[in-house]
Length: 130
Image (cartoon, rainbow, N blue to C red; front, side, top):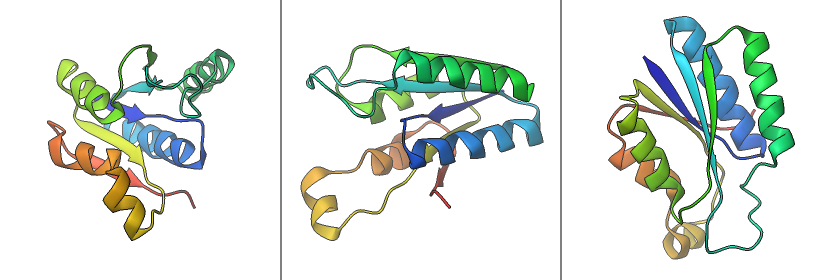
């Protein structure tokens, strides 16, 4: 089976990656790491540079976990992208990182994590950085 990991180049993304690899090792799954940029932003801090994705690929290869690193180049909704990929590969699990948000931030901005938690076609593991 496949574990889909939503990755952004932050502490939250690294926490999701670590947890996803641990789950894959424990259950003999492969890992699909997904990173995307939003079309509506000229610069997106969530878009990992190619060098970062190459590092992820090397680290995963060294870990011995079967894997794929995929960048989604077009789209405006990270939650939709993760949900679509999870359905496409019939994922066993989606792993995402969480960050602390204020009550007003949650109200005004919505929540990618909430959409993934509610709409993913499989269980979701949400982790925080240590």
